[in-house]
Length: 368
Ligand code: PEP
Ligand code: MN
Image 1 (tube, protein in one colour):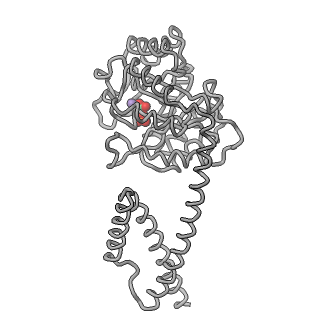
Image 2: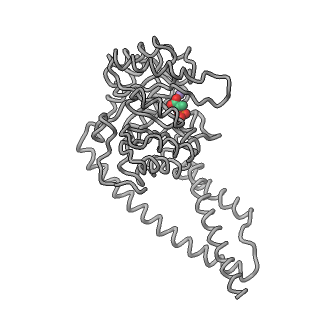
């Protein structure tokens, strides 16, 4: 990513350090002035929430569902800020939303998962935000494409927006169960690697899709040191006009914070033990890469042999045999069979790719 890497991770006035997670909470949608005020008052008195979230224009998968209260919701949020004192963040999906958000001096805006997927929309939003200093949160795109996520952050950066954060809300997948969206935590690790200065906030509500799983997901996010949480909270979740299954009450949120605080790592000496174990892991990993190098040498020799005898690269039976053998070995060593099978799928894919390269090079040489 082309953003400067030297800055400490920060976001607006709310987050100055990694030790200080940013807490965003509020309803999926602003539904009425009463609902907004009741939620915000409960969050304010509970004390952890720094930024109040509420959807004003709702992107719905199917038409005919509640699409947000629009302009009225903006007025409720301004009233809430005045009466309760919480700054607010809303979703923007086009230049018109941006204009309206800026007109009511929204304290921050977020770009939703259905918008991050489309560079045209993101560019339009980035240009509409040009010249402002408003903090912007970028949710991950619906499908697991890191380039789109980074690209959205870059488009905003190019327009001069400096207070940027990413929101990990999980990814569409047919294998998401028991969650609504598959977490794919490795996507956030890769985002952290490529853009270390961008805070990553976890949205356990949209990952979980079920209020009973929200705390579990939030705990994982804190354990892997994400920089904050965005949680959907509603005074009467079952009656919510959007995302009813995943919203929790302010009281549940308060008990969730207590659990997270109780589970926060306290033992400083522990770091030394962890570092020592990591050295052992490094040694094993190094050995694994050496072995993969050796394996690839054999794959290469085999490729040459196949090509010189005009044999095909891929034999289905051999692949099933490999999978079966390594699967059984995994089980006998008490390793998750699916884990080892997945690992070998990657190993095999790159081996086949390598041999295809050998074939191509040989054919090219023959033609010359
Ligand atoms: C939301 O936060 O309510 C929302 C619509 O989120 P996402 O873009 O992650 O689906
Ligand atoms: Mn929602």
